[in-house]
Length: 464
Image (cartoon, rainbow, N blue to C red):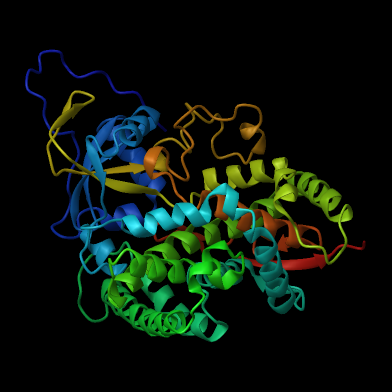
């Protein structure tokens, strides 16, 4: 699956661009990549180079760096040889007013994100998330014998992200969700902004989301201006004071670096995307893997029921409870390895450099992707087998398992995602077993994996 190619001739005196092809004008190889990212990467590693090859994605000529050495090189050279970057088409869909001028969310948002999502603060979200999961499951899962797990997970994770980042009401979440999902459907599509295309619908959806968020921002500004005690909010752990939107407005006012409503809305869109996108896929495929592997489900159930029995039935989960969910977290990690919620990310070369004997010119777009390692038998024997034991002990070799990236740009929301998925898992598993209605349900890619029928499952309540 991953053949080793012979080293290039030592006679080569002048480094050349990596091998590969750019495909069709504008379209490039985007459609091939999106339809099955793992196969796309494996085939080109075999054909061109197991280290780096060229292609064209989302309207940009791109070099894909392959393997753990490449991952280490990119992550350790952040801000030195490479800078964070997104294809202009993707940045445009996410509604950045100045694509790539201030990515991913701008310094003020990054600083606040780290403050709000660091471990010392993140533990206070656990009871809130637990409460929201219980309400969601009681309303949409438990009254039914059959549900679409992926569809419901998508609705829940988006609502939770809106609550955490913007403290949006249920009505506001409903107004934002439809255009937001339209935006996501065309996020990595061919950048042809013409009526009827996915990209056109995505751009239209992004515009509507921004307009809805601007309405929320104006209301929040008015609330803050009328609150004489808002300077004390930073020391309060209530949900309203913890949301990033309010903090961003307050911080902007204090430092006299006012951001426009459009700029704030665009940054919040980026955060909503980052907070919602990965967890939806992980929760859905976690349910799928537990249904397919009864022995794994049983171990998860035993771990979770011990925690449930040690608490009162209405007592919310705590940060300490999550630390006991070690096997469950291994199961989640294996789920993310096989069904990676995010295929990777992009960088731009800051200056000319050489990698693996190839020339990488300044301004060249670079893409690191989980698909060069996560299903590579060199790093994960029998790679398509679901085996949580891979994460016991010291776990996989460094830079072979990178669902959240690594280095300075490691996903700031990693711990929040961990809370969200573990809390969801606890509440579902302690009450229900589940069975797939269609074990052969097809999976499509956009480029994240999506069950075509919404992952239909049959719920069976535990006798206990």
